[in-house]
Image (cartoon, rainbow, N blue to C red; front, side, top):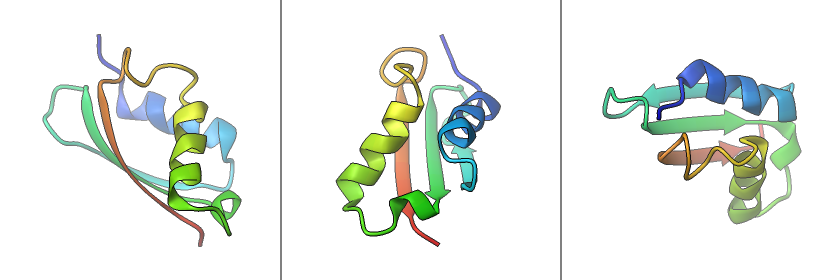
Length: 76
């Protein structure tokens, strides 16, 4: 099972409407992505908390339909 980059972006925008999202399919298989998310919601939060927020936004798909997601997060 794979998840499209558009689906990942939709979940992230649902949780962080202001987010600037960039997604690269690392292996061309729909299972291994690198994602950069920039959102004001991350301001003042440690990187681990930022990543947890993004994983939570994916509503349980991480580790299931989405196998690997390398994250970079920051505030604007």
